Length: 150
Image (cartoon, rainbow, N blue to C red):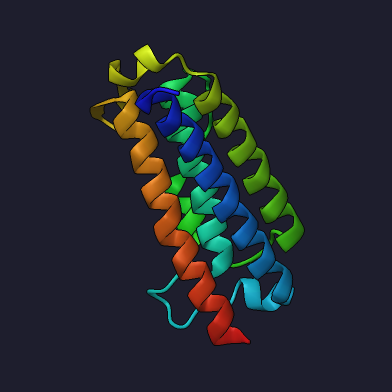
């Protein structure tokens, strides 16, 4: 196994593992708790799921794989409910699986290829690294919110 193929394998596994942690957390919350905010400037777990789904689609599906997507980032944070926890988890899981499929199928030589995401030129490796790190940070927030609400 090369370092490049190990990076791709590990990145996909990390995303899947963190998605499972999020699913477990959301399963412990009531639908109302999924959308509760500690204050107007804070995000609910529901907002974070919408945001993670949008981020995966934008950086990996669009940026790395070239798929056309629709994303309204501001709406991810403005939402105050209206989406059932099961739908949030389903959409996140689908986005994770789609992103992992792209990541796992990448030829290692593409890791140094430049792609354009959010007005930035980054390598494919940087895009994947960004997504995994970003997903990790918000997974921690969802774990914290779940513990605080239990």
